[in-house]
Image 1 (tube, rainbow, N blue to C red):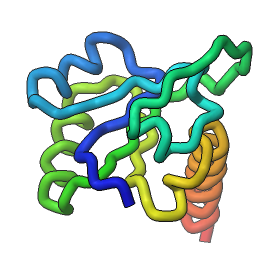
Image 2: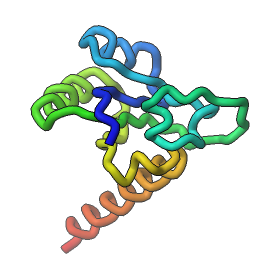
Image 3: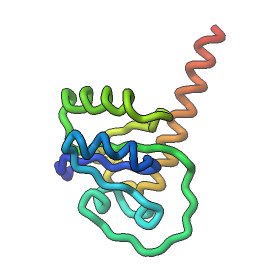
Length: 124
């Protein structure tokens, strides 16, 4: 696994990124030009070519190489400062091999499944 301590972000506004700058956290913004690249390639600094791929309007934050303690602190800051709740995920040995657009699709499906389970739980 690539151990570069870094945050990968997609769909965040400039004001949202300020929290990373102020906390001296290395981050990389994922654009549609590199969304077809593997997470591992994005962490390594992959460049992109012009693509017209449309991605969902979501905020996604991926964490790479952070300890559980560091994640707890960073997530508290993110939840306190970023408006619409972003999808949060940790880069794993499996997900680093996936393209960002595929991972994003998977994370959205997972979130929707979880919401559905919570609603069904509430009905019982």
